[in-house]
Amino acid sequence: MTGAADNIRVVKNCSKRIKLKTKQTMEKKNMLKLYTKYLTVKDRFVNDERGQGLVEYALIVALISIAAVLVMPQVGTQVAAAFQRIVTALTPVAG
Image (cartoon, rainbow, N blue to C red; front, side):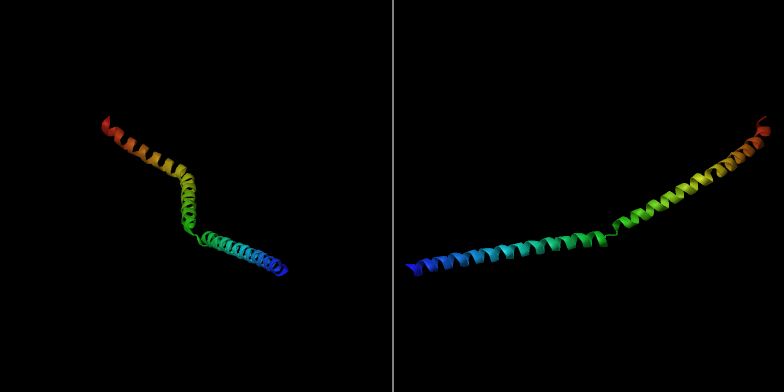
């Protein structure tokens, strides 16, 4: 009887070890999957240059806007002077 009980105990211990090894293997597989996903996401963000073009265009638009704001007052006075000359030139003809 002792031999059978020992055999049962050995089988239970082996099954516990197998379950433990299986659990450790599953944890390792899960960690490997998680690490692989991390590397994929990290590479996607590090190598992604799609937003770079958008930022460059935004900078160009900002520089053009600043230049337009600085130049418009001077151009506006020149355009007003040109229209005033046209009005002055046409006034004797109309009168």
